[in-house]
Length: 283
Image 1 (cartoon, rainbow, N blue to C red):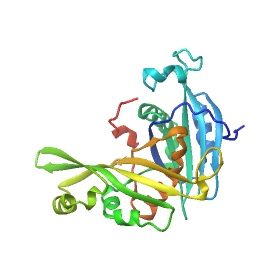
Image 2: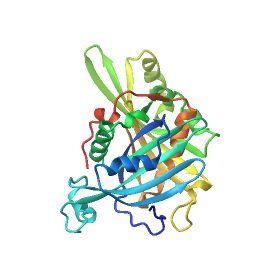
Image 3: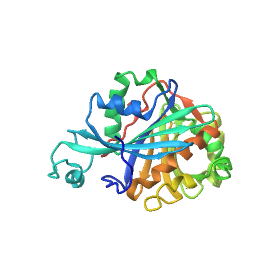
Image 4: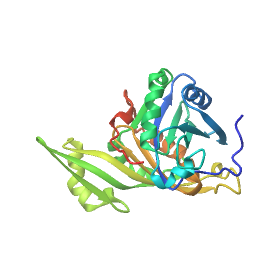
């Protein structure tokens, strides 16, 4: 039975979590996700963190023999607290309700763990029920003002980091822009935009700083605030990454981030597992 989230002892926070975004096409639930995982892995300590008209958030711990954290955390995630396997990792599942559609977010504390689990899910027919989605980064960047001035959902966001690859015949080079508003900069407006239009420049990834203020966040007066913020990175293939704060409270920014992407019409279906093109290897 799922437990309440009071007094949860979070094992893994203050680190990057990787996630994928999928569209529900055949009534797939978070319970279905746990059930599918349970056929291969041991799941325990399932919690319902939130359930409302906008989104559902649940957490479970998954047992693995492989290590997916640095050496200094092995004792913390070891079942016997001795640094040896088996290890337990907290994973999250979110279901987000848009006007006419529903989306699933699968969130993992390690990109390597995310790759392993998503590969298993696909081999067990996950794509009969869900479709992977990515963000069109060109559309996202062109609508930067709309993101900041968004009045549909209680989220304010701005792009603070982006990598652009320059295609010059057979050669490739890249430029990284950082700052409070890099796409409002003179350099971007006078050197980048025109080349993005003719596709000689390609946006590889970008990062958004997102701030949310919503009563939906104030689920427990002792655990969550009604204000939260997160830095979320996304690439051109459909890989997402969020830096989670103490207690992982800012994962509640993710549903509003997804709703924002939907409102900007920037989501596109992708036919393959985005994790197959994720080159990150860090724990």
